[in-house]
Length: 131
Image (cartoon, rainbow, N blue to C red; front, top):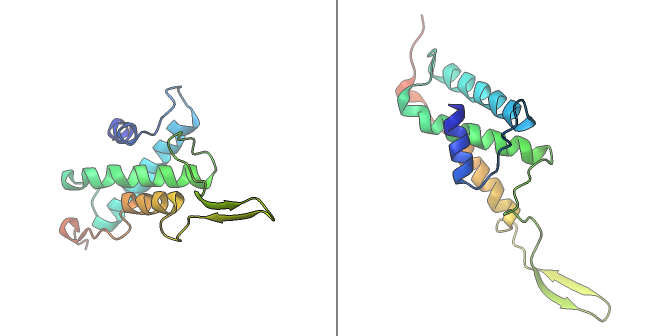
């Protein structure tokens, strides 16, 4: 699954360090274990079903990006969380930003992370009863 996650991150333009035992690798492995355990606990299965593989990969990517952003370690050059200036007035310095609460770049990125984490995914089809 690690290679699939790295491929998905690469397709999103997120660089991953190739050094052995780097912080990204450790965080990715932790995210894989966390998501795998979550899916296995929800389905009562010992391994992730093939039909949930892509969901699991996206969930790992979401966990990874969320953790990196939370730690302040997200270094994606293409992401810019600064507000766009709509109007500047020089006399008495009046600056107005073009911001709506849900349309800032950071809000859009957070929505994308939430989408990747699949918080609302229902695993009913794969759930197994244990006796």
